[in-house]
Length: 106
Image (cartoon, rainbow, N blue to C red; front, side):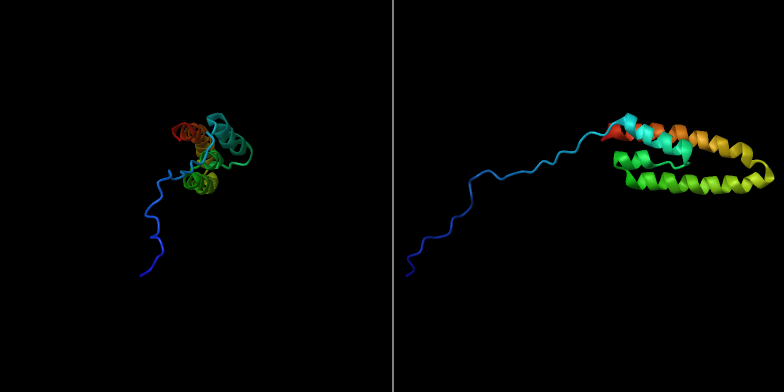
């Protein structure tokens, strides 16, 4: 016969749960990260990346650049001089508002 004691069944001590702190993102900062690069570099989507929506930010960034390329081509038939500023203003307003709202929903 073996005289060793049996192994303990289960620990009755409470298990540790790790709660990681995710700081809240500011909607104003996200909007500024959309507006400032959009004004000077025509680069939209950075505010969405700040808010944590990297995929959405990349879609907005590359989508706007594709739209700007189409508008550049339309400048050769003069309609691009109207559509490009309208698309730029629309992207500026819509992307900044959606980036600010993305921060509130997280």
